[in-house]
Structures are given as C-alpha cells and as structure tokens.
Length: 237
Ligand code: C5P
Image 1 (cartoon, rainbow, N blue to C red):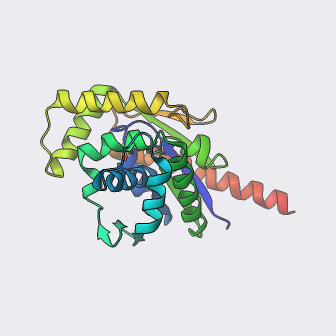
Image 2: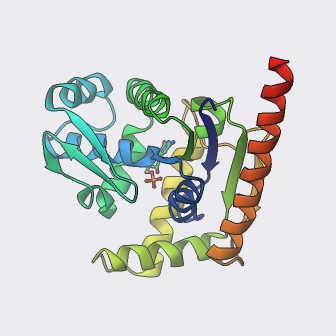
C-alpha cells in the first residue's frame, strides 16, 4: 500500500492532540504533530533572542545550523534542538504564544511544510497529521480530512487541565484569553490561515467524550482506507 494521509485540523483545545496520536496508534501509522515544529522554531528563536515577527530566514538558518531532530518510537516522539531535548519545554504557555507569531512568516511555513512532507514520505503505511492547515495546504490529497471544533469555554477548560498536568497553573480566564488571541492570529494571517478544507468533515467535540470522538473518527478512517483501496485497484485494472 502506498502511504495515505488523514488530516485533523482545528483550533487549540479542540481535541487534536489527544485524538491524532491515538488514531495513529490504532491504525499502526505515524503521527505528525505540525504544531510541535512551529513550537520548536519559536523556542529556538526566543532562546537566541531573535525577533519573532520579522526574521523568518534567520530563524531557519539558525535551525539548520543547530540541527532539529525528531526521534520517534511506536509510542512517543522527542524533539531535539542541537541535541537538547525540548519535548516538554516547547509546551510552555509562552512558547504557544511565540509559535503563533513565527507561524505567520512564509519562510517558516515553507520550512515546516517541507519537513512534514519529508516525514510523511518516510512513513511506509499511513500518517495522521494534525494542525491548522494540514488538509488545506500540506496534504491536500489526504484521503480523509477532519476539522474539529469545540466551544471556547470547553477548549479553555481542557487546555487549563493539560497545562496543570504539565505544572503550569493558570486561571481559566487567562487560558481562555490566550486561546482566543491565538485563534485570532491563526485565522487571520495572510499565509495558510486556519480554515477548514472544503472537503473536511466538521466534528464539534464540545459535548463528546474522547472515546466517542475517537471511535467515530476511527470508523471514518477505516471507511476512507477501504474506499481508497477500491479506487486504487480499479485504477490498476
Ligand atoms: O497545535 P499547537 O497548539 O501546538 O500549535 C502551536 C501554534 O503553531 C498554533 O497556535 C499555530 O499558530 C501554529 N500552527 C500553525 N499551523 C499548523 C500547526 C500549528 O500555524 N499546522
């Protein structure tokens, strides 16, 4: 089977980061967390004191010079910057904010897109890619595109819980404001804004359990894989 891609896009807190790795694992595929790459670049730029809004090319030069590596195992992935493990560090709230600013820069987006496509090509069977523009820009040929949504209050609650589990205590109001400000930047930027692909299936996860959404999307993936196999066989005969 040639590799197939399923994309899961949507705003922060909509459930992508829980759903995507779980589905990849159920399918025996790879998970591509595109947001993590923007976070890594933002982390590096902030660490080196680079201006986050104007210096896409300098950030990329620095990234190529220092070396950004992704180590994947069946159950986890680690991000290394110049050999330093930043997997946890890139989840800090200030990095989320910085990531949405570097993600506006076209040179940064080109670099991330190339990297993601390269990683997908190394995945023999299938890929579940999550982010903001996976279905629209990075993998327009995906066999299934999902766009997740949830109310701002519910997203803020989920994000607050996730941050607390990582040791960052923030009020619900602070988290909510941060989410809405990131949504605004992500939706309104000139390059690859966060918009659902025309052929995406929208799922509102506000009142759904993780188990319900996972089961529903797994069913959709299996059906899309079957349809894709049928199509491939028909084209071959
Ligand atoms: O998904 P996550 O919250 O880790 O993403 C961090 C930031 O990276 C987002 O707020 C967004 O600005 C940027 N991003 C993006 N395109 C993607 C994934 C993430 O612009 N495909």
